[in-house]
Image 1 (spheres, rainbow, N blue to C red):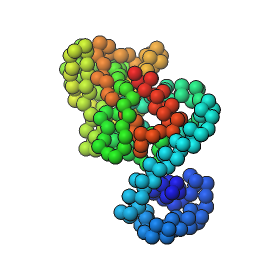
Image 2: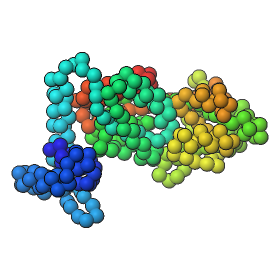
Image 3: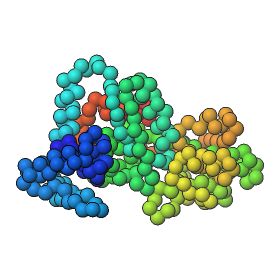
Image 4: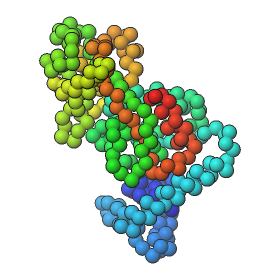
Length: 288
């Protein structure tokens, strides 16, 4: 059952065999035995593509829940005071929230030195897509409609930043409406390639600006680097103070912030292993 779930998640016998530490031939033989035992074909095999049959989709849905419960029981039988160990796979969007979460991941591994984190970054336009081969999938914004369980963790926010050289050449905006006359570095969150709007808040006042983007990117580090090189104004999440102290960036319109965006953790079931609960709880405390 676990082997079948791994093949379905990876979409490849070779990748699944490597993840399980088995020869590909052994994995293929055991799954063929599983299909004989249920009397149905669960996988549609071709030279180009591996896909689940209708029966395979139903079997996967049920066996995931069984495997999650089995892992939970296994952990409950172990010493509850034992340190967490092993690998956790986390999928998250490579956009606005990435840097806001980086420190939380570092702190988690410091508190749990036996844990390893595999962070899989996806393009922001795919942020709502559920990735099967993960213990936790993070979603910024409203969670997608799916069979997965969404656990609200908190919110991420940010501010507007630019380089001193850019501000000296173009002038500093006094209000978000002035951003229409500035070069901005937009986040490409949409499949049509258009940069996302910037929802800005100052007390009770709310403004949504479509930045005039000379550059549009889908990764926070690139947005920061472009801003530091004087390419324009960037909306950045997380702690940018080190770059401000280094003279690379200056926060503009400091009374305004990028309106908070919700962050959710998507899981297959509400029954989560203790180490997954520990990571989700740690992220929630950092985002509170």
